[in-house]
Image (cartoon, rainbow, N blue to C red):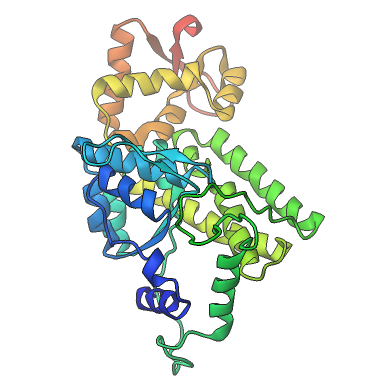
Length: 360
């Protein structure tokens, strides 16, 4: 795929202006490049190696700024952003930032790099991950990487030229990367059905955010990503977003978020310091999820089952219940919580944690 993407950019006449270096090592270098070429694509093999530098556990200042700038430009939606000040070039303004990375790596290497803090901090949910494991039935190639199908070339060119007669998202009067503030091109819904597909998925994602605690943050941008993917597909035809476009975008965005969720719950361990873990436990009571509110309504004010707290926070404790028990006992010793049991009809006594005014 990486060779095919590079070749597609070449035959579409877009490679000189829009292919970025495979990696940037500092926020200053990335900011300077974006000021010159805000619409660019990096193609990175073994992208996990690059991310392990950008997202290092002990980041230095240039790495912190690079991560911050990547997150910011991916969340701008064509609004302008201001780069950090550097000694060499000062601070610059980037109009309509649209930098993308296409990267390939193994699942093990990728999820060893991405930790839960990158999900809760908003970096991971700006990525779309596709599991390419496995292979289909063997067959003879029907084409050559050197000769992409005309339909694909035409779609890329159509999307690139969208709004070129005025001031469209990806266009300026002379050069796509000129310092111009473009007007957005609004891509409408093709039907009420298409809009309903998006609205239903958006509600589904909000419910997951509310019900899954820390893990729910994975779905914070999933509906937006689905709409973005559907819109890109529609722009390749220069047509409105259809219900089929939306279902296609939802399928890709959902499998990406679900994959993150499964890996985060099982492998993407991000142990917290003892003090931070105590704060996270208290937050389950002070800022309860929708499910947390339901449980407190059932079992009493500021009272939650211990197993509920463990399920929401175990990925911060190397999945070791001893660390979690120690944190609860420390909070009890400090008078923050009271540990007890509650009689549940038809079951054994259930361990509960009572916080603040909920103690009894």
